[in-house]
Length: 269
Image 1: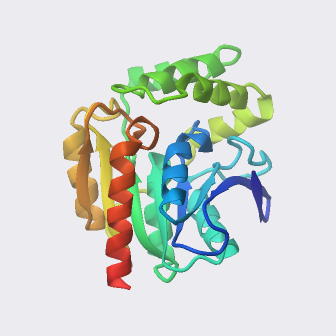
Image 2 (image 1 turned 60 degrees about the vertical axis):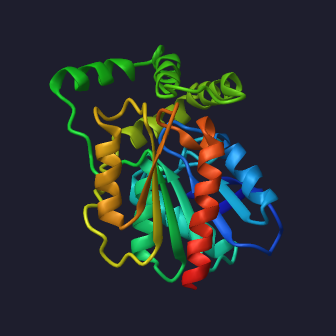
């Protein structure tokens, strides 16, 4: 594990692949997830010659809990700082869920650094839950049962094929949620005022959108994927036997899509 120093704390990240060679890929998980969800993608891309940095969100995993911002723009700023720290040039940012919005924001803000984005189960616009859903969510996030309730919800988002090592990943998430300070950071992330990415302002990055066919976050996952692709000017790949986490549920689909994206980036460069 490595640490990126930021003004209010440190971001934990893992490095896969060659030291200073190969295209840099930065992976950004979603809220109440641990960076290990990208373990298969990181290892496979490293074997293909890429450098891969997989970060935790603020207050998640092994990142510090000292930050006062936990929104998707903050995650984008951390991803860009990580690219600069590692000397990346024409980097690819892979984001899941909230991390996908962070990837899109990073690409908009620094087109000189980000040449490709892969958006997995992306939330580029904010959901508008009904009153019942809002009440249920508040009850879900009350301690002492909140950590186990969130892990059960996390498990339910893995509709379709369960990843290898899924029980170990759930144990990581539960351990992450138990300390009070870390739970507060995750709570702040869930209720952060996230930006919506509704138009491709300043976007030059090549893009691919990957959404699980069984993703329970949307009534029509294919329609949401098509809308996201229209915003970022990207291609769509629907992932069979998959819910909200293609990077861990179907790395056999995600990795070839990322290799194809990298080829497009290189061709453009």
